[in-house]
Length: 482
Image (cartoon, rainbow, N blue to C red; front, side, top):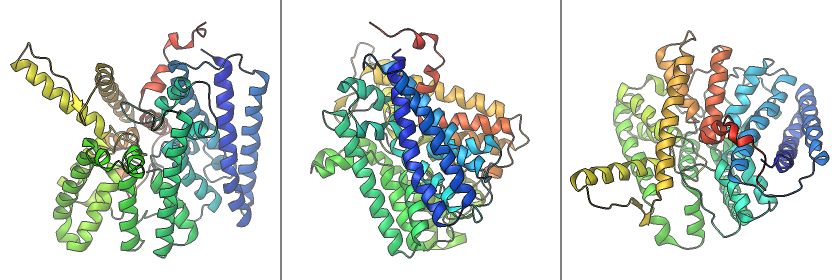
């Protein structure tokens, strides 16, 4: 393990987090929010002070292997969650540190599950910060770090990007990892600004437009109103619904479109399965809720909620916990599947679902023709045995973690429906579940144990399990290779 390089990179992450907290402090200053301003300033000083430790241990070599990449990703997300929670505590908005940690981990992991019950009274600096954590966590803290500086060889940087980026396999858009990270963030920033402009054109005030755009881009779902998006106009709901769907698409497809490689971009099997599932689900749910809302509103609410749940954003325009059973069940199933790999969305990922379907088809062919050699292909490209094995391992870990979490949640006094959907919502980075933790409810009344379990679920879900599990493998912490 290259500990010195690990410390250097963690210090870089802290400096980035401190820098991004400055706008939140400025907003608090502009609105005369003294307690929040002091909370942000104290946290910034603490982050910068801790980051200075890296100057005492300069790295002797820059070599960075896969295990360091996984460890860095896990420690980064633990660190930003633990320290990013301080403004909530120091400002008095969430004086209980476990609540503050839950809220911050929910923000950075783009989950959107909240324990805050006083949104209308909360300082604007705090509301901005919690929405900004979505935006930074959506594309990734380490990907942002990679966009700023070159970290050794290309393979060293890719170990970091693979550990943080969602999906069964991650590839560079261009040969240099730093350039790939810059392209991803360039597309991300551009789409966020376009969304912000449309929200302003739709009559949303500047603060709501900024925070809503940040939460939509990161597919997080933190809002500034207790009813999420329900009180906004149908136009604004359509805009947010469409952009949630767009941010759930693999960003590599947008790069291909910018390169005018339209044929390659639009023959992507994952994209078409994603669009198809979203369209069919919207029709089914609109049909289910038609008697209550009428044609136009049922399509709008159906599409918005399918887009929100499938991209794991978590915004809501209605209390879908009151919808017919088929609609509610379909939304839960969509939450398990999630968005595309390489997007800001969470969940199991469409690409993994494709790999499992193709693998199942291959095994059935082997049963019929034992001597045949069948290779799994997606978009005309063969899928390696390592990727298929990784997908199976992920599924096993995913199911075991979900089962254990539900067991631990059963120690709480909430209903079985609330416990199960809370775990699904947090492990898949969605936010709202059903029952007590539904779209018009929240997580504030859960016990401290349940909040800690769900906090770990959120981080496991965002990093897709392996980086955090690897932390507990003794072999990972052995001395660096010579």
